[in-house]
Length: 389
Image (cartoon, rainbow, N blue to C red; front, side, top):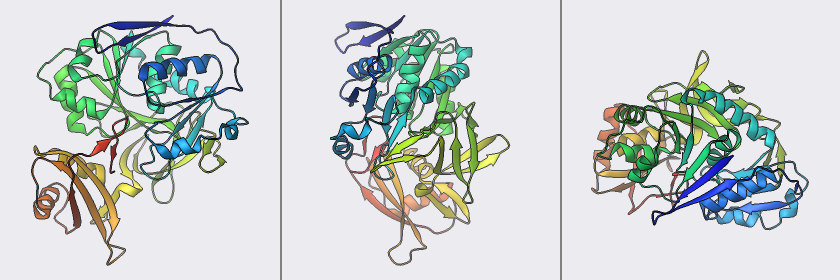
């Protein structure tokens, strides 16, 4: 038996006892958007045990909404759930996941965290993205572990909700926010899992030491599901059990596993048969690897690859800068010259020269071009990814 506990803003608690009775509605298709974590969880659970086809998406994305006007397109395809990519690197792509895809990954994750003897799962992430559904919903559901969620957890709410042997499913934004709270709590029997974006090693180390706990980062994508993991301030990623990794001639990661979708939807259906070529550069070290970054977010200095995420972390370490968003663009004058296009949400307006000095002190003394913009706010989507609107 699994209890789903909802912590309401008024201090009350709503409890749902989950009925795992299996029924068969395999021809039914349901659409689940991101309006409410509580309702989403209940709909996903119902769809899972009634064998419906559930299509999950962030309802702020209008492109996806248009794609779902004709559900008859999906009737003849085998899937339990379909998730969409964020669209940060192009048009959102739908990844069809069978029950086998989902359950195989839950088995691997269960083994990965078994030493923590998890008694409850606390959820800060939405369920419409695959990370939330797999780790925060299906993992506890299939292991008879209670689930605790709140529509909007503030850092102190989250600390109050943690009991011994909790698994906290969260994002780098929450980890960094908890690093800033004055309270220090011994959370040595619990485990934090973070995904959706990179968590820099310094923040991970600070968090681990402050709360005497582990933070496990998961690396994956909507198409591949989970690929690899690392703990605290480890530099190298370890592939998950049953995941085979390789690289193409450009050192971009290719993934094969039972978790990878067999079919993708993008202006039609494409069979990929459990193998997916990513655009992520990696450096291999025996049975582990270093993630350099996505090809669209990579630039070179002195022949060495750097990630724009690394640049964002350097800038966000400056006290006056709340958020930084960096893209790589080609120069209008010379297509071989790359420009760092930098957008800042900042209390202070830095000059281009000041930003260059900050970056050169950490990266290289070589010359590189930047284009600088300022905005009142850099928006984020439901899972904390930065958006340029």
